[in-house]
Length: 536
Ligand code: HXC
Image (cartoon, rainbow, N blue to C red):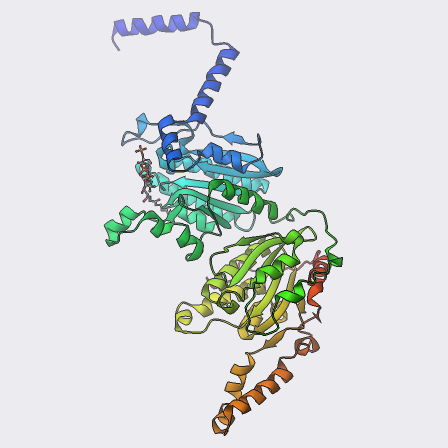
């Protein structure tokens, strides 16, 4: 610095010392203005966001949280990245709004990525903001909800972005089974962000705008030569029906965020508290005549198990998880007598309700989730077995079926099984049978529990006799009748204590409500071990 420059600097300093400091009101106004500017964002980018049919991050949080409950943290945070012109672009928020609010008066921690800032991409500061709210969610035992709209790892921040994702995943895993984690995909959710969707307990997606993939179409084409659209690669059709990543799919952001609120109302805040209960409904005295009409007595006739479910639960209300993936099994949250339960049910309407690879995975994950969060399980059984065939065997039917077996065997929450009609073979065992630890097994008079159905059984054990018979069809019919009479009759399992009672279908809601009350204080502790080796 030259002498003359030094003089000028000293003069400026003198002036500054002489002028009074800004008043409190000036400071307040200045900060208010800054906060308003930050909250408004860049008008052009916001307009583009709307043109894509998407709300802004702040509007989404308004829909998600109770009015006026949001406490924002780190609004003024900015990145400190150098290079590639990043020094010149240091927007406050760093592309993510983070903090805490309430849903129906219950505390939750949230972040909402802001696609209008660096495409919602995740750099160091962005990641640290998310990690901060994750830490607070875990230490206060509150659900954690992430609203995603992001291009993935911020390319300009290199390894610091990847490091940021790693810190998030590590927290996802530490929080797993302790607090509910909900991931909502409202735009692109590319690269690293996709793993949080897989690690969360539930992922929501919105049709038309949500995409979930590890690498976008451009990278796919560059690496493999394959040309795909965003939707073909990772739209709701893919994750809602095929990959099983999206537990809930919605047509628009409004209904999606409303359902996130509904889901939260069914979940405990953490694994040490009970799910929120509503007032009791005197379900123990509730008789439902329709239950005697829904299920056909003919064992192979289809019907909709959701109708049975609706009759059993309060107000016919239930929240189905993964409704479009593996619809041959139903997984749903509902209430009986105001208390939350998780329901797993075979669905005879789809593939006759068989268990296959996808159904096993879907139900296994649901059972484990209910068990982790102390939600009692009700299992509605009408299952012809596992789906046979090379496709299934080669796709790992045994390994995936074992997941469901493992999940039930390990579950220590109250467990009630209702055998509505048939329950054959391994699928009978897997669907929360007495042998794997159900607490209360109930069966309808239509129950048929056996190694396999009558026709198949007769074909196996009387193969030689049938081959030698002059009229094999008549002999088969006789043998089927004999097998059915001796092994498939409705009290066979009850006589052996494998079913606790054969109940009148119309009383199912009432008996299940009594069972849940009986098991309310169930305590069962697993043998100490580091962890089991669940077949992954
Ligand atoms: C930095 C990004 C970015 C990213 C988008 N932007 N993705 N900036 N890092 N990853 C910026 C764009 O430069 C642009 O900035 C603004 O966000 C909006 O992006 P557009 O491309 O104009 O929007 P759109 O056409 O809607 O496309 C959105 C998109 C696309 C599909 C997400 O941007 C895209 O393909 N991004 C890369 C996706 C990807 O492959 N991510 C993987 C990263 S690797 P301006 O200044 O123009 O507004 C990764 C590895 C982690 O995540 C692995 C951990 C396990």
